Length: 278
Image 1: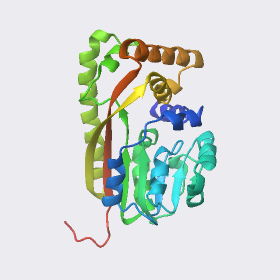
Image 2: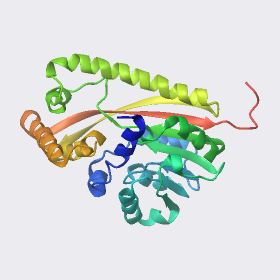
Image 3: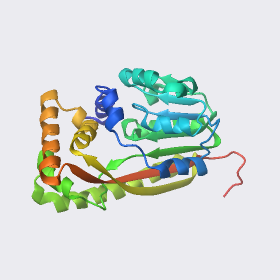
Image 4: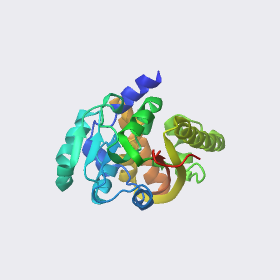
């Protein structure tokens, strides 16, 4: 499947159950928003745009921090409608644009901060970075981060126990862990390289935020149901898969599973026109 087709299918995978997605998707660690506030200027009156807000997991934290206005670009009309109904008082400060980011026309040079929370892999990065830079004012900031539900450097027994459900042999667990570590290193180098090569950003930084969460068996099932690859399964296959995941959580882990979470965050400043040459 081509990358563009994968992106198109992925964008449709999360609107099937917006309320369930909002309920079970993990929040982001406080450290993310500390960085946005201390380094990137997030605060009362900051003009912010967000790519792919989904059900608003990050949007609500941006609004609580004072984002005003918050422009969210959401391609799935079902998720956009959910946001429209569920943002509460923050809705008056939020402009919802129902579009892919590649097709949106944001005003140039007016935003203090642009963000993507577990969504930037669904856009064409080569096209998106120049668009992001144009939308930011000189000295504005860009930040992107993900929750990786499984830290490659802190593998867990639950990952080993569920490999067969994913279609992999448990005996290949060690190789799977090594492959994930290599993939993570390549991803970090690639994303930092794209930001540097773009030529419109400076003060580029990366930080891996490590944390953990304990989930009950129904919460594990709900979380796995929010994963893009699971959402794209045919309905019967998806139910069988989630039944199996919940069964392992109950039978082999006493109904509570500890997840190691890695939240890598990248930040970069839009080059200021008045900066002295290096």
